[in-house]
Amino acid sequence: MADARLSASRPLSPHLMVFRFILTMAMSIVHRMTGGFLYVGTVFVAVWLVAAASGPVWFARVDGLYQTWIGRLILIGLVWSLIHHAIGGIRHFIWDLGYGFEKKTADRMALFNLVAGLVLTALVVVVATLFG
Amino acid sequence: MTKFQIETPLKRARGFGSGKTGTGHFWQQRVTGVAALLLSLVYVALLIKLQGDDYPTVLATLGNPFIAVLMLAFLGVSVWHMKIGMQVIIEDYVNQPFLRVLSLMANSFFSALVGIASAVALLKIAFGA
Image 1: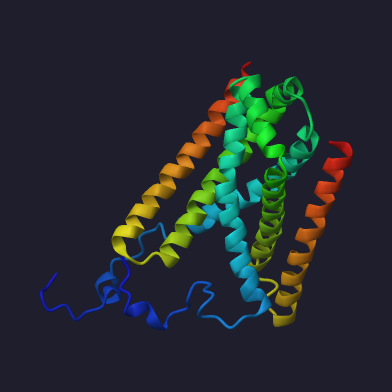
Image 2: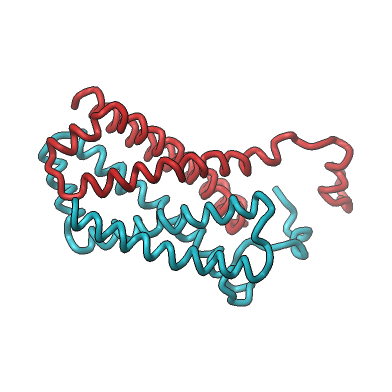
């Protein structure tokens, strides 16, 4: 395990209490947070799938729970997390290829991620409501 | 290891070469990320399609071999992606050694459980629940 004394002067992981608040820093945290939401969210997917595999009674129970307003709110939040995290992932791939490190570009990419995530989530909700 | 240890871990590690596994998780995170990105398009389309469908339709859709394969791939790849992702977060923020080992273990157990549950359910439906 790494010696804590040695890591004091090395770059820190995204941390709310240490970093000054700027957009790219905030988006780094949001990327981790949406990842965390999706982590917990897999329980909802697994429970729904197991219910579907367990027969009509269990499916009706779980699906009914997901259809409540709080259930819908959680599911929409998870869809946003997935879309936001996916666009954030594309941002990471762009960085991995060596592009997008200029301050302006990085800021613009962060803003695009935020806006596109919200717009696409709204689009999914609208399409699912209209055609689902 | 001597009693009066004044050398740094770096000094002790120097000269032994790399462990050859340093970038393993980094690369796995990218590969599973690309796969999850592509498969999530299918997943979101499926979510929209299944929204409001009745039970027999849901079973028939999930039981379609093409969809079953893509869903299994999506969930498998996502569970691996989230397992190593959460591991990075734990390694970054949980410094107390006992808690750290405990949370790393819990992460493995949770990820395995979610993955196996989803896979068993999907396979059962695909083979005719």
